[in-house]
Image 1 (tube, one colour):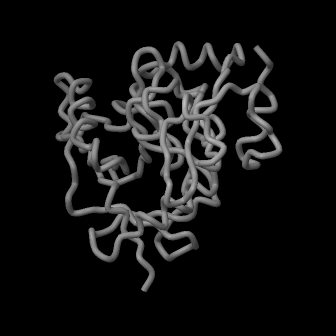
Image 2 (image 1 turned 180 degrees about the vertical axis):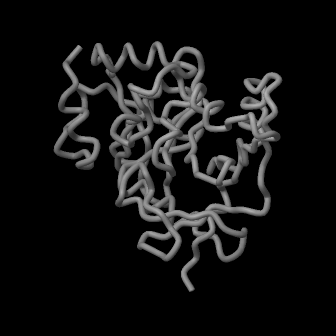
Length: 245
């Protein structure tokens, strides 16, 4: 049986504690994507300046919402969301009964990754089975898709390819970091991009992560220095549209 368990991911559950609370409305005012639309969706919680703090997938769970996030930073994300909760009667905690599973091919009960169909299919289930972390990392980086604190750091959200990966809505209304993010979009001022490159061609001064075992690196480069022909198709259009600065 193929390994599917992503051990470096965790699940956070947001639950209303009474019928007057609306978890989706609470999260809608905080994160970059429309969580009242089709789920799962890819989203981020940003700083006030529009820089990445946490990225995650948002799943439907009845009246609850479930966040598929980095395990290493899950407790920090719980704490940050709880800070915004104020006096709202919403429970926010890790759900240890669930884990994130992934398959590069369709499986019963799995849904396509909302960022990019080629990323494969995901589902939430009991934390059982063999780890697929290494296979997922290789698959994701081969497609040129960065994720997580180690690759996105505190970079401006639009510079992480958030538009191309369906990680931002410009129509849903306000959220933390929305003002600067929207301004960058309308002024077309996305001057840098995260790109996955061969390790031997990586610019050490602009490198944010390296994977020697895969001979790949993630660099944060100026748009005018990129060769669109060497970028994955999903990223190419956004880069070509950027004006030189």
